[in-house]
Amino acid sequence: MVKLLSGSFIRFLAVGIINTLIGLAIIFTFMNLLHFSYWTSTLMGNIIGAAVSYILNRKFTFNSTKNQAGSVLRFILVILACYFIAYGLGLRAVHLALGHLPAIPRHFEKNLAVIIGMGLYTILNYFGQKKLVF
Image (cartoon, rainbow, N blue to C red; front, side, top):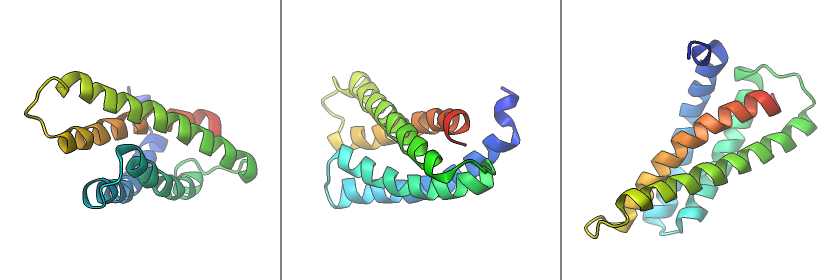
């Protein structure tokens, strides 16, 4: 656990706060104001957040000097894997926990799934970026 609190993880979390605020604003705008689907909204928010993340993590978090062409492809693959795993699990977890309760509004379930998915995504993405990309 102490190793998780090392410099690169703290910097990763700082970058994550920035791209999370941007991504969440986009996700909730698309989903709640524009009424796009859960998957379209989360994908749009994550694409834009991922672009911010790549730029900041490459230099600030991991100070990477690896070939950028190769790292971009690995970055995209890690982002996609983390996205589908985390947001799929978040949606599934909320459906399992709350799906049987008739009084829970559907938009609340989706918003909660976004929050859970984002937490899972952050953890998976950190390890994927650290081990496979940068």
